[in-house]
Image (cartoon, rainbow, N blue to C red; front, side, top):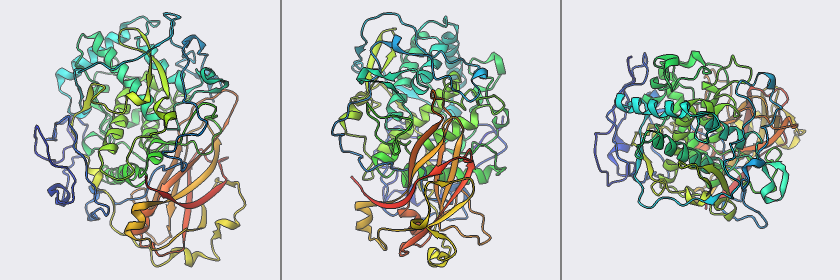
Length: 609
């Protein structure tokens, strides 16, 4: 197969200087990537390969990128930001989420699937009970063998053969074995579809849910940790590491070929994938259920600024990136500000839906939480999601810190380890991947420089809309989003200085979003977007971000509530609207929004901790 290629840094074994400091030559290079778009992704690009990621030093004011360079992007804004303002303040009376000691307390996952009769994977998601003993607290190995997770598009044939061998060994185990392929798939179903309750902490009436909150990153990190160690155990190779789907890099923006080669004879193959999205089709990071028809170059030109938006603009603080707090006693289906972080609700959700088969009743496998774990690509996708957590912390910017609240540090889950022991693991023990014995092969992150140049729409768009567009204070809420909605929203301050911006982020909140949790839901948000004959896309300066939710079934409750926030500090700079007292906010429904309602649209200044 032909391949996507692009020029990168020269290969090196050690890097002592920051990749993106103010004086870095890399920041000043043109970085005009060479891309061949008639291809799959089995190439070897000359990327720096080093397991020790240096700090990525970002200047407060990023250099603007030449708009003619489409590969470096044209967009800014932010997917999914801070959901509440209690980022680092421990809950006064909270109790950490705790998975049950007795895994036999697990129940059949919620059967209220939109098409439950056609649930091809089944909803019996409980793990086998090998012992009634209480799970022991897991202790990380001392001086472990460091497993280096490779980028899937650069995997060698020897590595692919070993990976296939490990997956086949897992699939050959009896279904009731705790290490079997079926049991690994059930883990996601149990934790995401109501298999466990909060009974361990005195709330048996409430579900334990690891999505749409600050539990998302740590739960999946532990999930992959044991999955990887089990695979290594099965092939007697403790150094074995799973690959990551490098969808944030142009060379990795197609479904890795190793998962489709030889079809059903390949252990990595899954029959429930969207056949229209196989290589050389470029992954759409802003996927909303329909293909846009964008060319390869144009799609990459959207994807890179989308990643910048999710990792920088709308991930400027702990809550924005991780998601809202979730502690024992919270109802995960009806907590207004318990929302997903920028990556979870952004590229994470898009990839799930893009890969899942739309011809299946419930979008199996990747397109629905209950079935996602049955596709080998799920784990490779989530390896890159996990890599985003590591990169976000490596970016040397104020606010890029793990949660410090005890309710997060002491939240815990139960897994079978590679030795079939039932163990309890805690968030506090998974914040450092090196201590967990793994790391990621170095790969360029071109999205780090994909902030757009200024794209002014003319002076004070909002002021010109007065009398034509309704002010938010005059809107009757809840507001139904069954059509495009435009409102004028007053800002708390104007013409903020650089020092002001370093102290407080300006966030646009869309709160009290009520929607059908069993549908794929997505709407886009734009700021000061006017009809001037220029098409506004996710790569445009005016694009603030999106709200998106993957379907997941949850008992007798059809409706869910959530909220979302978008960082607009940089966006207002780029559209030259920093002096405007109000902004024009446009909400554009994309899918599943017929009955979706919103209870509040507001702008707030949030302290940067």
